[in-house]
Length: 133
Ligand code: SF4
Ligand code: SF4
Image (tube, rainbow, N blue to C red):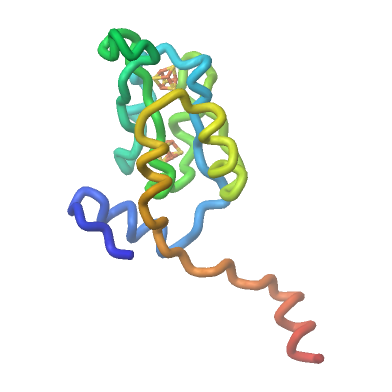
């Protein structure tokens, strides 16, 4: 699925070239909203979301990662001063993110059709085994 917004083009190109082995997931229970990670993300996929109190959404804003755009570079996890970003295996990240996310963009992203990525290329020994069958 092509991205509609130009800002997604670079990320989409990177993702289509190589499916990341891991994705970053923020455990919002430990997030202070300092936004350090936002500055480090090279594909601009960390979003600022409202704080946990619905009556005061501008207080203690949090961040979330737009998983379909994450290229798994690990920079955010490396530089988060509160050590609350985990790098998880590709499929595991999608499973865990809703549990660690209080509110915000993740639910919206779930509604969106995921980026089409090429199937992982079979390992050489599997290809060779198939060829001899
Ligand atoms: S750097 Fe860590 S604590 Fe700061 S906003 Fe990002 S995830 Fe939250
Ligand atoms: S792993 Fe890299 S691409 Fe993914 S959210 Fe963190 S900084 Fe951005």
